[in-house]
Image (tube, rainbow, N blue to C red; front, side, top):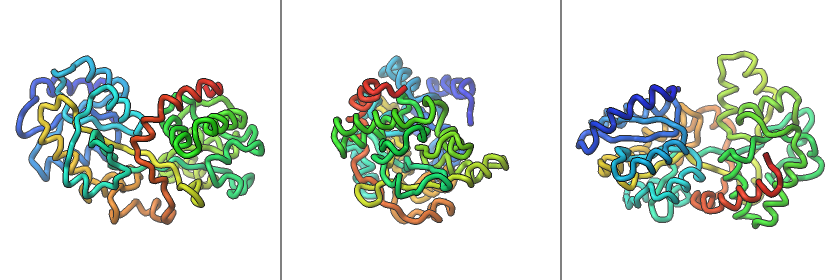
Length: 337
């Protein structure tokens, strides 16, 4: 992972090299080794050099707002539909009508107006202690609010975008009133005040601090493949469950990107977006970062493949962003810290 000072040092090169036919400038809130491989593969295929500025999503959005039409950014990469929606709402993306993207990406992974696209899938799933929990008790997200789980649930804070998008999906499916009742029920069932990241929730189950946790699937795969014996052993004490298989399917979110409104190299930016939908790029995302590919037929990581197929919620990712403000208000009302 690159540290922020290293990423910021790249910015001078971006400013001095904009609007050249052989480059594309990317602002990225993704910090994965797999992305370095992606950039190299894109350059090898097209001859277009990739300049990258890494940072936190909100920081990059604020930076582009300050830079305005002088921004060197051609493409913004980030994770979660909620963050893509924030950038869209701030006018930072422009519409792209690409035959390649329209053909290769499912409709659910494309903004209706082509403002941004999802290129990798992340399942927000349930983890549990098999010694204390019957999986039939927790086979839906809604079950997390049931009184029988009082004092047994570990989950992140309400300012976490992953939880905001999960609640946004519940608003879409169950209505705002029922979604608020769910959020209140989960608050009542928390084993501890929200703290830490997704990995900490899984480890909370492994340590016995809670019986049930919510986290994105790839945090679990990282633990199972860790070089640290203690982390692997902890993960092996925990089971994974894909909720809502008998109705709408498991909540899915995305790693995605959009063409920046003031892109200096828009054609190269579109070529990069189209490359992300290629089999080569999809395989890198799937194998290197344990994400699910978006394009049908692309091989998954063997561990993910061992879980078999599961039903996925097929609402358009843009709805998660549209429902984000209401999700935040609900979290505030129920006292979800």
